[in-house]
Length: 263
Image (cartoon, rainbow, N blue to C red; front, side, top):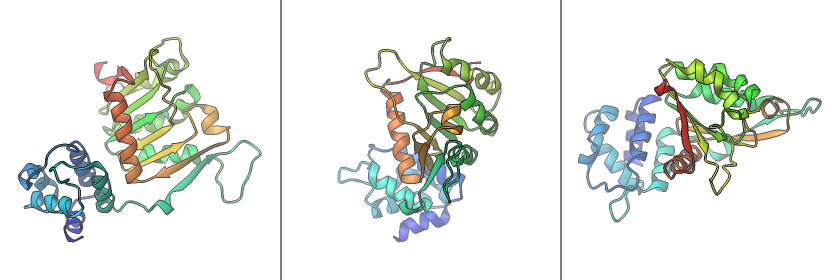
């Protein structure tokens, strides 16, 4: 794929790649009839970048017969440009209970994997965790504050965060206070009491390029004591996870209860 290789060669890593993916993903479903609609790409790919990008999208089948930008082929295109890891390179992460030792399995790799993911974020972090409590958030708080200090946007979706007497609200109080005045934005969402479904997934995504999918909520037991299993996935899955979570927010399955921007 000559044009796709040209995009991969021209673009600056990692921020240029992240900006490209974000801009294109916002155009999914819209008509894309010519390179003139991609003039912004020249700032990422250099002179004539809009033409190179348009031809690469055509080359990968990202533009449908009706001229609309298609989600699934775009995900594959972004994986190619970003040189995403192969499915076989996905890795398992674990929390193992005390006394359970398995050769080749790191007992605290779940918590370590989450911390590593937070540290890798340049633009945004998205957390979906039905349950959280002070020990779990406390275990990650320093890394989250460091991310906010480098202007990363952090969206955290949980249950019952709008109740002042809830564990979730109490667990987030310190993070709320410490996040005030930092360049990044902390946004906390919760599912309303009338929600017809339970948001049961446990997901963490960084920049739409990598994610952790697993069994652990952000609780002390889940990160430090239980038997928990997760998998670290790459670009293709991270993009899909972000799409689902953003759709849930847009459709009102969750509502915002706090943002550090209003403090």
